Image (cartoon, rainbow, N blue to C red):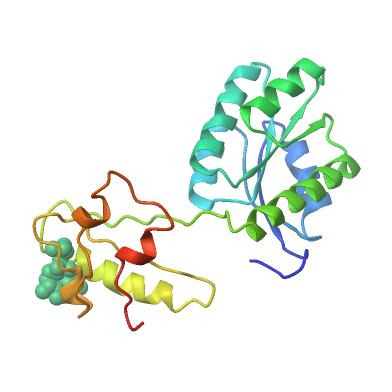
Length: 220
Ligand SMILES: Nc1ncnc2c1ncn2[C@@H]1O[C@H](COP(=O)(O)OP(=O)(O)O)[C@@H](O)[C@H]1O
Ligand SMILES: [Mg+2]
């Protein structure tokens, strides 16, 4: 997905009730450093797509009831803070643009959507994303493996998934067994833990500087 030095392809989801607008964006934007990976004609379906596909950028139509769209923007920013958001609207009063920015959108284009304007918005998004990555602030992903009953293989999946992810050259992976009474991930990986969760959280929190001190390094 990631290219080097500024040629990174942005993965885009378009949420727009107007089919013609979606077709226009796909036709004009797909290809040149941008890939439309999903589209939806309403915010509910759009939000599901965004959660599942975790795009770099969401292009979102500002609905007649702006507050509804702005709630969606807030939700996306809460769950996926690194996702860029571009809003499109027929109205472009300074007041409205201000509310969009306060909700968490980074860009605003007027409707009907114009490819030139959209390109400028994407250039801006690309710069913002590169800054996030070079600051090392890009957040990790949390995958939870949960079973409704003991002994059906949750720990086995975590051990294998953890090792498979650690093999990726760009990935740092931590596995945590949250089964408090009989966490056996260490046993399965033949890697005795250095510290327990109680040690890690002894002063009430754990931050990025403390993590390396409390995890045990596995040979994988
Ligand atoms: N796909 C599988 N087929 C057969 N046995 C399995 C499979 N996955 C796990 N096991 C075995 O089942 C037992 C329980 O697995 P474990 O991963 O500890 O489950 P859980 O964490 O859900 O309690 C272990 O002995 C493990 O080796
Ligand atoms: Mg287990």
